[in-house]
Length: 456
Ligand SMILES: *Cc1c(COP(=O)(O)O)cnc(C)c1O
Image (cartoon, rainbow, N blue to C red):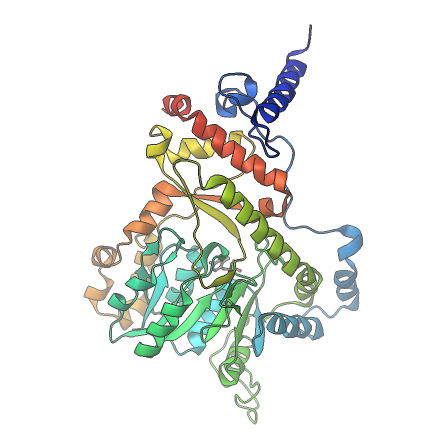
């Protein structure tokens, strides 16, 4: 008699062969309803679709990748110097931007770009509501007031048709986020900015090499900000960058990031600090990691795009699954995440939480994504700070009134009910890996009645 584990393997193998033979397809669906362990959801005790590991992140090869980092370490020159400058030159060139300045992280890239665009207390900044908290944190650090715009649920980006109604005499900037690495609707955004004389600072912290009409994300507005944090597609542990074609602005950003000391055309003849600056300098070994990984970014971005398109095609026909949509002008996306919407009505009412658990049980790492940011306590804390109390009238700092004014129902739906993410590192796998993801979703769909009953 076979051991239980062998028996499971045996059944799995035969179910796979059987399904392939019956369907006569090259990329068959390895589940047959009720025929074996493979068809039973892993969450209910069946065999997971996927048991082998996924590509790890970050990817670092001891033999191939350590040379430059070791050289920097052994040189003893660890503060900003030639390696940082080389990374900046390469990143600017890669994007087609005139200038690049690295900083400690993406959050501070945004803060520096906002401050040096002269945005501060009393100003309003129109911003994406479906984003990482760092975007909003950056606005609050300048003393400006974030004004949240609802999302376009198909693309997961800010709904550019809802920007203009938010413009007031105090609006100074639009801060669009290319969230998940899928470009925001930059045509409409730049048009609105021009008509209302607004600065556009792109949060491209997830959009390395993404493109709008063949122009790189981060190079379309007045400035673009990037992150090189560990989880990002171009990681160096921590790190960030500002890119712009505006020399005066970039000189001011440089000065600001180094105590306000003179730089470029900013206070050349002065012997001490000329701007109210801070200290945001990147270190040499971080830049060495970036320089080592940068040559791979293009190929990896292409692979993610191809796998995303393939996976999208495989899941778009599954009832209750709506994969991301790209705007027609998008010539490339960077897919920091692969998003789709989950509609429980098509899954016998099974909650998104059970769907995610079921998908994870099948061996597919996934997430529900962001939470709404327009009603959380960090805003109240900012409003209660000394600076905000001095800069704004009491009625402008009424937290309940702020929440009422900044409602974003589409973003709430994405956050609380429909949004599902697959992580970027999975998109570096093979076509069969993508089949595993699609097959797992399909298996859950086929078993949704039983899984919905499992829901407590
Ligand atoms: C990561 C990220 C940031 C902040 O970057 P850090 O380097 O982590 O400070 C800002 N905006 C978005 C959309 C991000 O994903």
